[in-house]
Length: 229
View 1 (cartoon, rainbow, N blue to C red):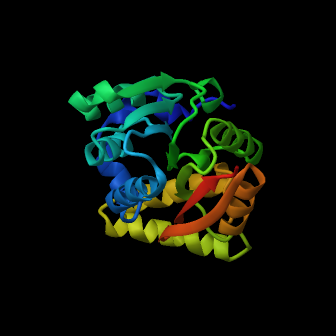
View 2 (cartoon, helix red, strand yellow; view 1 turned 90 degrees about the vertical axis):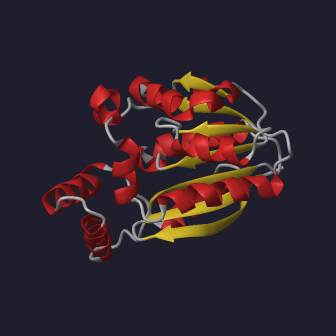
View 3 (tube, one colour; view 1 turned 30 degrees about the vertical axis):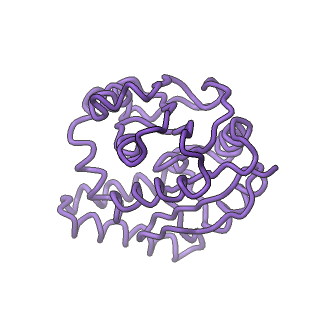
């Protein structure tokens, strides 16, 4: 697995993280709420949830507040972001084991459910495939998995259009236009983005079934799937 992006290793990465993320991801808080609802559809009352990319703690907090009997393992390679997660969780942290590292070094489980929000777009195709296999290996058969991140058509012309829409949303949400354009340029040149069809095929290839789109917010997409038997 590659090293985490330098911006997430720096202590400054935690400054106003929740506010900055909400300005870039359409319906971020609703996405987190929907994730909790989708996990609850198939998870037992006393669920053990694996959360990949748990740094910051926003997703963990929503899940923990909605379901007081759930327990969590939160995995992230960035120490500053895990420190922020602990701070964000407050008293809820007693139900969360924060793991500094990657999916392949996380506890084996088996888990009743897993989530991965706003993380997979940082990984190369091979890294995604390996990460998804490690998540699947840790899940009980039939367990729900919720995943969301940047994903849009990658054909010539469409790619540029969706990146411009990313800029438009960020600017409308209060992000400085120059900063939004620089972010989009960095996304387009450095992130190994996949189309929605490629994402769904990869989920099926790595051991997930009943893959369904549940969220589409400008350049972001989200899916719910089940661990195959």
